[in-house]
Every structure is written in structure tokens, then in C-alpha cells.
Image (cartoon, rainbow, N blue to C red; front, side, top):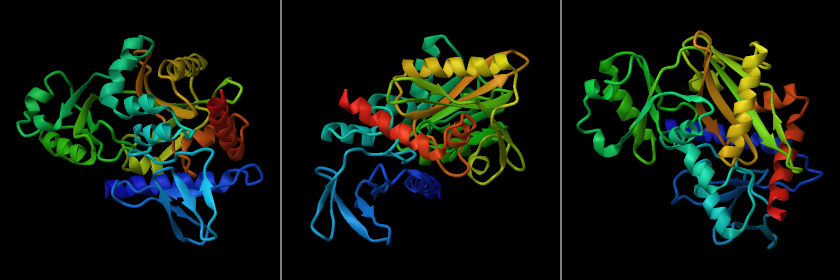
Length: 333
């Protein structure tokens, strides 16, 4: 079920990009890469025909005999293999430019248990306390020992997960084992993150570098879950169980702080293309906490980054044009 959810979000993101990119500027081809590495990759035509992709050079040979070799890959796959450095490493070996962060940044940021200590070391933003568990620690899991340094509730999530799939807000010790097992099944590397719950408000900030090298920091968004969603879970993200307020109705100094931190993190983490930084802000402590960075932010109709771009006066088509031109410009340097 979790894999199906990620596939659906990735397909929706890809379809949104495909529908909005200017055809007068670019020739587009949909390439479908299943999560199963043994499954065949294929070009999906507009009339739903499947044409195999030659993985030796990432090319497609059409029924006319014409061989299509690409100038750029616009990566829209959430999770494995599009967001964790796997595709990036493959394209690097082929010398094919792509739109996302590079191999190392993608691999680092995809694993929250590895990324959080790095962000903490920068000393520019608070990071929630967390503990990384590996598969070999699960069989002898002791909830009391695991939660010794935490106060309930805590979040249990796949270390390399996305879209809040298999994420549980644990409110009692009795929930811990099941939550860890659920997260472990979803994480391809067998790693689970236990993270303290931060009281407060959730904010997101999109950042993009254009072809001339200028950073654009979008108006921030506040995510307000409602209904059965207590946090920004899958239903809140994709099924309408949240309100996304852009620009966020928050004090200017808070908004400026989020934008400043996002600007610094974009460069410190060596990001490329358009990314989204997620935070929690505790107004009682005046404390801003880093949650994660999304290097392949969603582009569905419900997604945050296109909404932020529109609030900044950038149309969806122009946003994708910026992403493409930035990647092409970087490859030509």
C-alpha cells in the first residue's frame, strides 16, 4: 500500500510537469521507472503505448526507428530511486544532466537520520532530538529503553521515507513496537527514526536557483491539519485534510527567519533545482526547528511549491522553465 501511494504521487507530479512545460520550448517524453529494480523502464506515449528504455544509455527507439537521446532528465520520482541519489548516480555515470540535487546531497537528505546531525552541526537552526534504529536492533526492542530520553508523544518514521508514509505519532509505549515495525517495512535500508514531537506551527519554504545563479526564496506556507489529521500526514498532504496558507499569516520576523535559514541551508547542503524546507516553530520558546528538506517536492495540484511560486508571481509553467534552464546552465559550465 505504501509503495502504491508513492507511485501515485510520483505519477501525479510527473503528469503536472508534463502538462505545464512549454512545448514550444521543449520536446517532452514520459519515462516510467518502477520502484522494483528488476522491472523494465519504458517511455509512455500519449496514446498509452510502452516503449522500452535502453538502460545502457537511457535512450528510446521509436517505432519509426528514430533513436531518442535526451538532453536533460526532469526527475519527479518521490522516494527510491528518484530522491535518494540512485538515479542521480546513474545519470552522472552517463553524463546526462538532471534537475534535482546531486548524488551526494540527494542520498544525504533522503535519510533523515543522517541529514539531521549534519544540519545540527551548522549551528543555524534547532533540530529535533532523534534516534536512528537499524534492522538488527528491532528483534530485541525495549520500548522503555528506546523512549528513555524522550517524552511522549514521539514520531516514528522510516529514515528514508517520504510523503509521511508509515509515519506514526506514538502516544503510548504500547504503540512503539508496531510503529517501528510499520516504518521498518517501508524503509528500503531497514532504518527507522524515532523523533521528539515539537509543539507549535508547521511552515514550509521553497527555494530555487535560476539559470543566472540567483536564489529565489518563495513566500512561506503554513500547514494547518484538520479532520482526522493531527499533523502533516499523507491525508493532509494529498487528500485535503489540511489548509495550506500562502503567504503564511505569521510575524515578519518569523517569516524572515525561515527564509534566511532556508537560504543558508540551500547552499550549505549544496542543493540544486527547486527544493522545499520544512520546519516547526514553537511560539512560546521562539524556537525554529528544522524537520526535513524535500529535494523532489510534490507538483500535484495540492502541492505547496507551485502554490508558493504563484504567490511570488511565478506561473507553474515559468517555474518548470526555471528548473529546466537552471539544470541546463549548470551542465554547460
